[in-house]
Length: 465
Image (tube, rainbow, N blue to C red):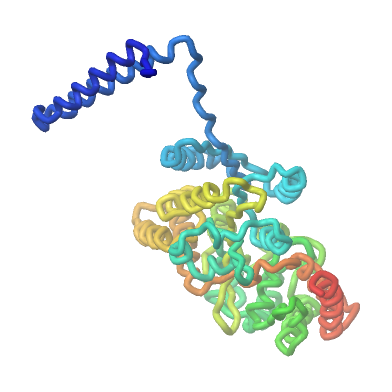
């Protein structure tokens, strides 16, 4: 039996066939017009065919959930523009951006993982990211990254997001410290610039204390505060852990480093509060004129100009302190993909887009941070070279620009001094607690280091048998 089409569609079929046959005789310039007519015929024909049936619902876009840390509301316009640009290139996927307070991200993320509602992409600091990676909580990005991805970023920074064969992070923005020094106190102590090496600090600290009554520097030994002192141990050539996660710090270099800090404290050359107060106290002392130098980011100068303009007028930026190897520290903010994500490819794509050269350079300019992208860093260097030479800049702004330019130059010798190793916060707590005991005279510095070794190895043997 011959199959019959609805009359309207039969007529449409005949019209389309005639139109297509006629293309042979149509000049090239008219082909588009003919095809356009065919399209309209088909469109209206399909409209007639669908009469009496409900139109198909448009598919809902898939949602990519992204968490960042403490960016809203200041950087909401920036993030909004990046998200909109990525969504235009990825129709069918929408980005749900959630900004999380720094203080609560670990708790919120662990709760989300437990509830199986983890985001697809998260902005984390290296220690927490490394801890999650070591427990299998993060995707190995090597399975979804393009082969050329690593070459786009600073090598040392890219490597910091790796554990063995596991690439658990894509680096985003960076910060480094410079030395900000009170030139008046330096001059009173007979210095034109602060020391560049840690082994020069004892003589400098003694001169500052003797001639000004103030302190040279403040490095906290509070276990859950800044990792600056742990970084100084690495600069002093202390190897923290071996390949099996066992203590390697009870070495000749480790004993020298523990003795260095213990001696400075017992001689009264460090503020007594270093054993009881954190980095914030260093800022307070410097703003009060009681500290000759402080290690901070360049933008601290802006806060200083507001909170202590008299001290700001005496302050100048200098290179950071280094050890024999000349290495300085760089802090990295990472992007990671939880293993629970069902959109790993899209999450990685968005992370690479957010951290590409143009987006990183725009963020570095706005947030006054440093980019992890090689190309973006070159662009920022060019910006700052022009800005530093600007004769119209007032002195305060000129100092901030000099400090930023100095921080960029420091990246040549910068690396993550304390790798994102699982248990690193526990290691810091153990070392700091034992160093406190040595500083307070409760135990000798060698004995304190041996006790730290014993405590860490007991922890490591239970975690990594």
